[in-house]
Image 1 (cartoon, rainbow, N blue to C red):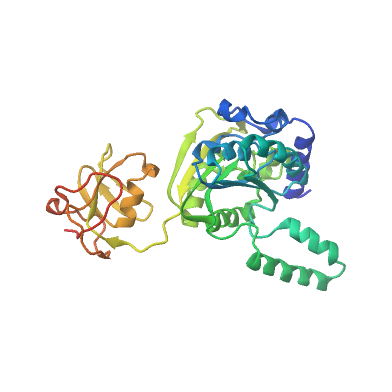
Image 2 (image 1 turned 90 degrees about the horizontal axis):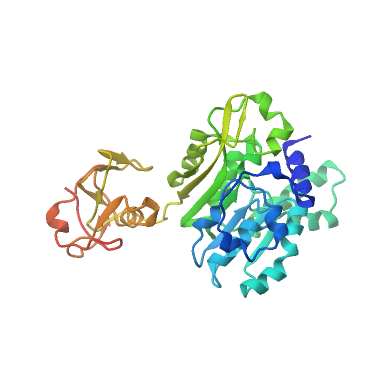
Length: 372
């Protein structure tokens, strides 16, 4: 049995009856659970709560949405102007989530949740549309396979399931580990593709402290049980950095492992990251001061920040470093007087002259400057 077939079979069983061994204990916001039907809560299988990263007005994409629990929790947070999309490839789970759509729309005051069929490693391919195509153009011979591939490529291009740069926040709850190792890089590239510039990800998943050996990866029960497909803890972060994300970090880390198999610890974590803004680096005289406690730090783009020094930054990085992404690690100082911006031409680690920022606003967003 293939990885995909094993996962489908086990989660179809999970839609039929409760599978207690498929989830870790999670402290969800009980207020958000109050509106949810009990069946959705009982048949949800996760290891974290990415819903707590949702903001009002967000377009949220939930990868491997299962029973729809995280989607319906997020829907309460995005408000009337937001939207939540759940992606899953399991028909039984999709049926369970959709079963309560009308009821939840009435409770929420609007229908702001949608469930679509797709593989999370290929978010452009609409599997429901492909099923309709196959009903009219069944595959009987090799030439039909070639024609199907051509249709798939056209569908991805002309009518993608999830469009480029269309999502404010991608969340997932214990699903990335279920994807075959050969598809994990593509999966994270797909996440990067669909997130808007400046958009975020919040992924709850299982990681291992050591590399998982081949014989455990071949164990179908361990794989579909969210164990043997786990990425090693450092590799998990590096995969998102490689895809192009910045501000990649572990926001949650369970001290106690969920399971230990052959002395390998498997634990629940939540990773957060940001897609860089697609805008040029313009020098308008901004500065930031790194608060500490470390003597210096580097960001994912190689910039160095010295503790207590007024570091020269471009306007784009100023906005990022003074946002909630960096948890108030930086003091932002806008230039004392606005100036015409110019392309960034300062060496990494350049300081901003005090005279340029003296009297400037100490707040998150502003403009102007030149570096020492």
